[in-house]
Length: 444
Length: 91
Image 1 (cartoon, each protein chain N blue to C red):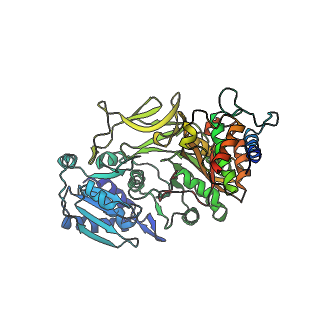
Image 2 (image 1 turned 180 degrees about the vertical axis):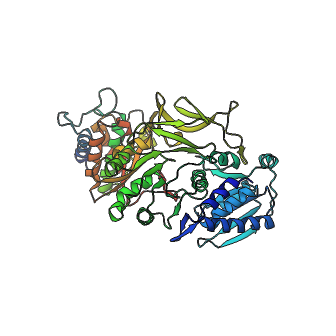
Image 3 (image 1 turned 30 degrees about the vertical axis):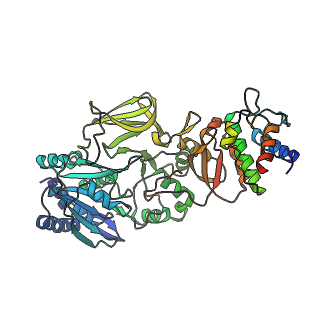
């Protein structure tokens, strides 16, 4: 009943390409047959309303299973292969059944022996609605288990819209990834799953399967630029590259626009607790965006963005509610305001405090990356007995250069572009900077 | 290392950091306070530069120790006092 409209669309498009996985193209008919298998499996093995975790990459089975879980009114807890603390998360999400895929798509079915009885789970069962639990990383402390009512998201996709041939770049456990996936499925578009997520592999995949939309991160866009993988493969089928989840260095934005004037760069803004919001950039090479849409209200207090949403989570299973009495959510994102437009400066928790003055790593990284011979910069704070903290940078160079010469060059270049306390005191040349499994910058 | 050599190293580091030919730097150049040739973040940079310069000569010292910070008269007052402090730390 919950996904009747999606099933109907699948039937209408049954001979169309649905998913490209392991170098094979599967059609919607195949997804329908796997869906029938999984729904039967769940009806025989799993109680309606119970909490079911699935560890997988995007593949025909995991996607069909996700749809079957919605239909069976289960609470779905997605994990990806990047998750390292699954045991702890199984516990905090009160997972009752665990379906564990390996990388070839084979699966194990495990009955955990927990009885889920959290009041929010009981509330969702009372509504007879399917749910999703996603984990919010948070800057400190334990990951928080955030419970969504799935029907809010499904309702959003009842109106049919255009889709592009899309790569699922965000991992299976990511709220933004689930949003993208459901959007494509409900509009019977094409999902591409590249096997290895390096810049070269992704560019090769784009060429081979004529991909039009790559949702990604600024770090990955930078990796494409550095690797020059776009010279080896033809990526001209791309129409849109979207990015969110971390700060875009202005240097990357400008370099990209120069190389690919025909690809639209689109900034998205999403939060595990609220959903993915529509954004509108001032222009293709601008970092100023309008955030929101009819379902969201925003306000800025002390340069921090607060959001009130129609479709926010019911709450956390292992933490107190993140909303204030009026329903506002503190995003922890520092922003600048210009009329209706906002510019994201960085996470409040990333700010380096140099003798009482605030430094945003992204701003410094952006200037460093304009300098000749610097390919990539990762800026962080390090303690200093005089200033409390000072700015430090790890750099990847194009070709070798003595550290002293480099340091002088950086100081000269930064002198009239950054205030003196923002200019890195410590410089380290490295072969690679830390990038997480999700292609986000790890600053330290 | 003697005091003259230390002074030379400090002067060279100050000059490189300031990067302004018109500013004359000698051993009496002030590094702290209103008359200083560098601002506070400049001093921090200078200290880090000096530590890495000395490390290249296999002299591993930390200039910003608790001792340096808590002295009644700061060793960072001038090129001369900083040079003396380096000599003292090398021992």
